[in-house]
Image 1 (cartoon, rainbow, N blue to C red):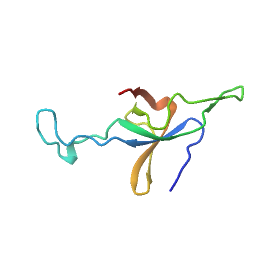
Image 2: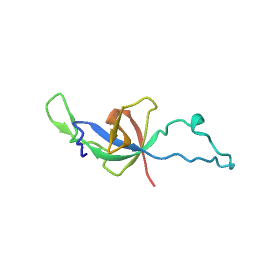
Image 3: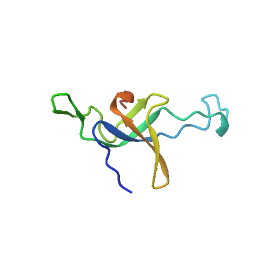
Image 4: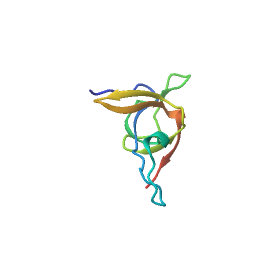
Length: 96
């Protein structure tokens, strides 16, 4: 299924977390928290301003981002979990 986000929304796929700590300990699934990092799959056209102009988003498809813990709406696309976020829920872009 293909989906196109509207306005200032993004579709994000969470980045898989490590199962092991740096010290070599394995983390059970029950102790894991959902990662706050994800890869942007698709972006909307931009936010509509009060004067009617559209401001393009600073985030592009393919960017890796950090987002707030309770942000967005979880959806399933082709059996995989994704999030729909607003641009304001993004805390930063990870540059590698």
